[in-house]
Length: 377
Length: 258
Image (cartoon, rainbow over all chains, first blue to last red; front, side):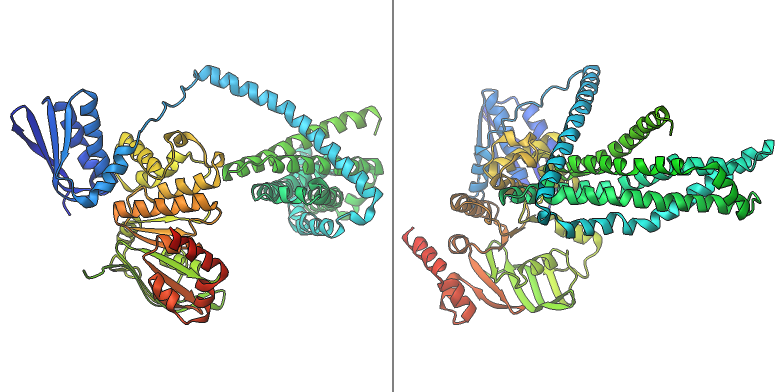
């Protein structure tokens, strides 16, 4: 096959004949287009004919390029004709000829400053609507709990146990590993700096209070938001995309009761357990480093720990855990139910779910800090 | 006129998860014909299609496309072949993060070196050829109805003017009128560009109205291949049940009265 060419003209009186030859196909369209453009630009004759009898192969690309040239000549009020059209290409030309090509121009791009301001405004408004949606979800969750409490047999116990295994039991190894490391790092940094003024022993106070009150629960919640919150969002989102949630609704089931209640309940049970395990692991990691790196004997560590922390310290950490689990679950489910049709939207909502859950967990931690300070815990 | 095979499948054996799904399939698709491909659900129609397309590995056998053995084709040759076939997936498989126009332009951008202007014009021409208005160019797939998604997917499959068009149940999920329109559309486009069409279908109307030849898959082999008359004359029990069942008879009647 040879590339298509538009041969130089043959003038016959007041009209001109262009002769096309070779392959006018997609493969050569890039090379043919400039020739056609040049011809439409340069030819000044009143009437023009394109002879395509010598074209070997023709497809939509070639046919459209010829059609385009003819259209532009006709628009200039000139006469354009097609000669030598083979019977087997007639249908193709008719199809291409019948196209209107009326594409409205793209909507104008707004000024970039205005666009930035607009997106800031929209983001701020969406923060408000996010809070409303969280409250709505909490409301429907409470309604579902009430309904289930009145008829306990309808509670999806199997489903909850299944999710409990996924978000609780299977998360134990990774949570233990991370919290041991965090405890160890805290202790190492403490010893390194406290040693300068001979206060090594107070590392135990720092690690104990920090881990039990704040770090244990925060690390666990961040892990759970990333690990389980994201999977809740993606699951519910995919279910929404495949109309499974609509199917549930039409069968007379409340998706909140069937899908969301067992998931959130599983989180509310799993997170305190994981927090307890994580805090113990962090203390263990701290103790190990204090012993191996700081030379503090385990008996000394335990004795000091007993003085430094009270049961209140432990309670403060544990009380926060279920509330944070609730926030993670609510955010994950709200985002999951907002997934639209596209794959991109699923990705976006999953990201949002993790980011918002971690943000809200930290905000909630701050509120708890103020609350516990004011009641003297 | 000697018929030229664009696809030649010989003694194809494919296992899927330890089960032998295809066991010695021989099939030809000729240039310029519409081949209807039928078989019971689960008989392996999709497996055969996906194996030809290179999406599934095969155990034994040979597949030639445009006279090139796919096992021996180098990367360049393989790309050249892929440029010359177009596939319409059952659910359309449009890229949901791209607009309709970008979907149709996607293969053009990847394979051809043409100006942006020509690319847009070709995309709109293709959209108009499959019976859509140019307005859909800027829409996203999620804003379209099922029938429109199929049409856009067809426009994308046709974007490079392929010589073979694979259609996986093109009329499933369409109402009978839209399905009939879609059949006519495929036939018109096939006449216009004289491509080969390989159509997996369960739609008896499509088989009657637009297919030149029908191939039937069963028990891991091609049971029968030929025209509609061959199918109707066949004594194979599955074929008799398929082409002489209640639904088939009413389809025949409708086809005869047309």
